[in-house]
Length: 204
Length: 86
Image (cartoon, rainbow over all chains, first blue to last red; front, side):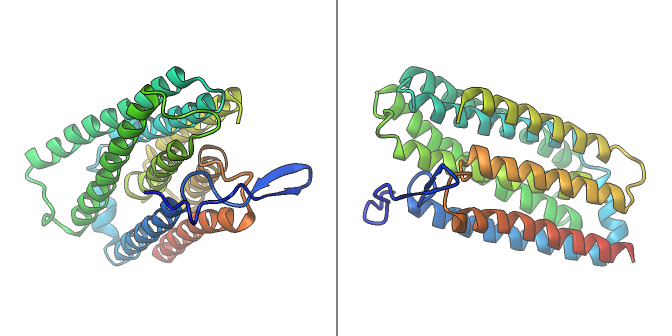
């Protein structure tokens, strides 16, 4: 995904003594994609919140059947994954390729951890006979979390490609545009879960 | 962004997550707890956008787009929960 025609020559402005960049980190195209993804999740979150309004007792009762501990653990994993990738960017900016690759791999492993927790969480529900048609709450719960999990998988795939290139010395302090592109997507996956966790697992 | 600063943000986000989970353990969740959970989420989202996504030093339009998404989403959720309490 390269849009060098769109990508900035590093225009920068100076305000209050700080250097301000014209564009966000990474490829501009990924930010268009991120904004589209955020819009889709906004619609889903709003649909959940307003559907709940019409079925308050069902949503409140069903939410108590969720494993909030698993939700919390997955939040910790995604936050840690985001932190690992932020550290990978900080490392490559100092030309520490090997260290950057290690942080990227740590980020990928938090994604693996997230999917393992989800596997057991879904397994418990499916064993109890719960599926998309059980009731409206579980339709939303499964659709929202599975849609998000697909984004985790895509984020991990992107990080894996970036990790391979980093291991091969493909990024440097001067050239890490691609790494920033993937990192931005991975942070978006974390940001969405920051709202999904309290909305679906906590608030009633 | 210094590594130390990123570590501080990470710890803050972890603590805020555990706090949210702890609030969720409450048997009854009144409006003050719902607002507390949404405020914690706003702070967490803000930190991720500013310091992990690195939009702190980017022109205000980009920050406004992503922060606007965060605040609008939380406001709509708050509205729906507030209507449910009436």
